[in-house]
Length: 334
Image 1: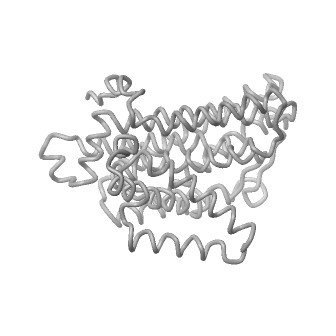
Image 2: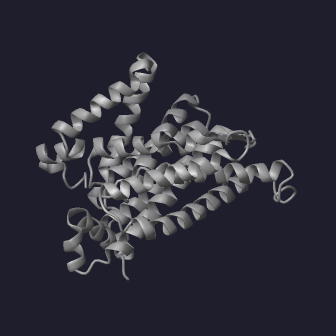
């Protein structure tokens, strides 16, 4: 089945990609100054937060925004990524199977990321084959069940599921920023190619009318499973990077809260678009950070009010509003 990904690579410099490339340029420029020792670590730390928020929002967008399937279990894959990185490091430092094989932190991180992505792909393919035959609220409920099952299994490991490790602290922040930047570039490229490919158009058809998509020849079940797998792999990537940065993993990494955060970012930005999760992720992070600083007791109340207002009065999200009001920007905010 041709998904049109090869043809989509010809559109990598189309106007719709400009927003992503602009962010990559900013992140890279800050990184160059940081690695050269010309700026403090405050700016890279802030940008890493933004990269992660946008990255996880983009990961969910593949199945939710592009295909129209809301997954409340997306945090499972985020947690699996973090769990895998933690286990790999602990295996190398606590007499595990990797002890004596390598102590290189970069090699261990890559192995952990690959393990997390592989486990997430396996879980997404297995669960997706069963639950993606469900639609609407039934699929959402099934993913919540998956979240609680995996969360329970994780808590059986270690002391209540809390595991820590030593990632090796030589140039730790510099390495972390580099991996976050690589992760962001990969995430943007993969999601962008999905969005502008034949595969992406098939997902859009499923989102608009799944029965009509089937009549037109779209293999809806296979398309949805592929989208679920891609979304899971990207979430695992960011879960692994987050675990590396915090040097730990725990039940919090699998929390339903992360899934809700990802959903909210897509809704605020605008469903059905590539720019939506990017803009939504940035705005959500900024608002959440400011409220946690100035009104921590009301942080989630403020975010809840914002979501209610957006859904009630601007269901197309920020990108939808901008595209409707400023037609000239529509080709840049696809």
